[in-house]
Length: 93
Image 1 (tube, rainbow, N blue to C red):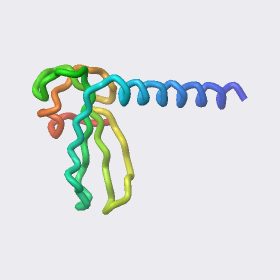
Image 2 (spheres, rainbow, N blue to C red):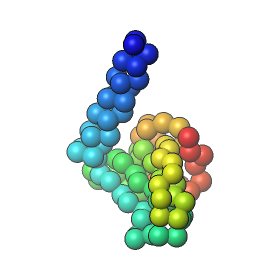
Image 3 (cartoon, rainbow, N blue to C red):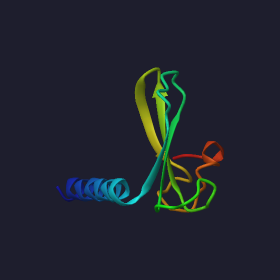
Image 4 (cartoon, one colour):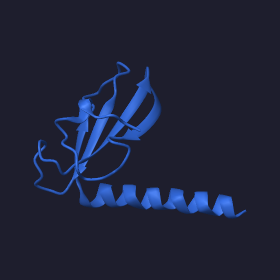
């Protein structure tokens, strides 16, 4: 039972972090109606941050056709220390 509770708390913390990012951050979407199975990136930063500033958290959405199969963070974390312009060069996990 304790293991399930820890997993629930971890999922709740992730949901809270995502909500805070959606509410308080500047968000860039790299989708452009893409349906070719290529990755889609989203970047989160404080308002006024330039896309080349190392102050972004970058998330990658990977698709198989039109089906979402994976969501990962640049460098494996949601730290605000990446550039959005460098999004394709990061390793994701």
